[in-house]
Every structure is written in C-alpha cells, then in structure tokens.
Image 1 (tube, helix red, strand yellow):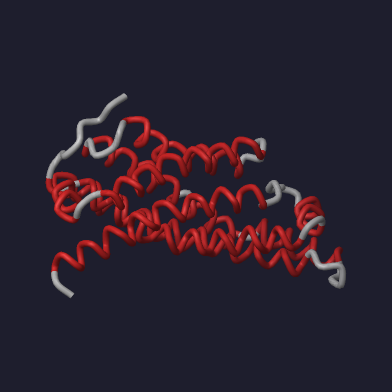
Image 2 (image 1 turned 60 degrees about the horizontal axis):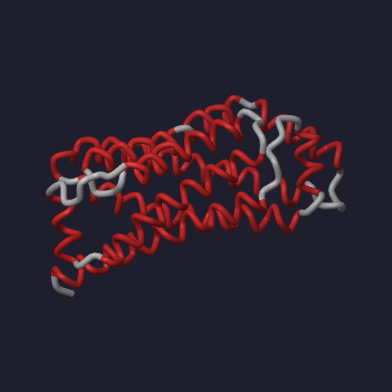
Length: 230
C-alpha cells in the first residue's frame, strides 16, 4: 500500500466513522430509558422493556468503537499549528472513552438484573451498592473527560477554520450538554436533542471528509484551508 492509498484509507475510515457513530448514538438515545438516580425505579424502567435496554447499550458500544477513528480524524484536521491541542484532546478522550465503556457495561448488567426470574429485592440492593460505591463514583468522574474531549475537538475545528462555525459549535457543546442533562436527571428530550445536534455537526464533517481528495485532506492538516462562516 503506497502513501496515497494509506491516506485515502484513513480519510475514508474517519469520514465513515464520523457519519455512523453519531447516528448510532441517536438511535441508542431514543431506545435508552431515562436514567434514574433511584435503583428501584431504574430497574423498573429497564424491566418495562429489557430488549430495548440491551439494544441501546449494544449500539452505544459499537458507536464508541467508531468514535475512535472519528476523533482521530477530527484531530487530524486541527493542523500542525495546533498539534498540542490535538494531543491534549486525545489524552483526555481515551480515558473518558474507556470509563464510558465501563459504565455501559455496568448498565448492560441491569438487562439481566431486571429479568422476571431474578429476585427484585436482591437486585435493587445490588444496584444500590454499585451506585453508592466509591469505585463507581470514580468511574463517573473519569467519564466526564469524554464530553470534555469533544468540547476541545470543537474548539480545535473552530481555530483551524476547516468547518463552519455552527458545525464546530455543535460538536463542541452537544456532548457536554447531553451528559450534564442525563447525569443531572434532566428531561429525556434534552439528551435526545443533544445527540441529534451532535450528529448534524459530525456527519457534516464526515461527508466533507469523504468528498475531499487525498491532497485536500492532507493539506487541511497542514494549514487553514477553509474560512469559517457563521
């Protein structure tokens, strides 16, 4: 594989991931039951439709896998002059992604805990211990790095002038708003709207990447190739 083929492969994988990852997150958010701080209420919500709960978390895991090449693609667009910002955002992104995957795994366990054959009292007690443990709390703290990484990614896109301002703003703000709403027990509609906004912004960049030539893709990494528009 020559240099041109390698560049083309990276661009296509990044562009495709930018399109698929946020769309999967939108579907997952629509399927996902509202997060409850009370363990009994959460298990009751999961028990109402265990199939949807399982499907939502399976889609999230696939989306997180696709988020890796998507995020690397965005950092590529920052340009050489913003290499430090790119490296910092990657350092933040990786532990945030791992922590989020761990939380998804914990929530996926509720799929079995909410089954009719399980002892509901015992499962509620187990869920309460998990929610109140210091280990789980530390994972939730680390998971906040995930939306912070996307905030930095949006800022990097804005500074590099490779996307319109509104696209950079959607990518920067959607995940922080969505995470804040969900973890704070906010309305489900806010979380769904945040994922939709995130998808609009990231899909725009993904389509832009797929339409570019290899030369333009590499050039954008080296210089401010496109003026930002309001």
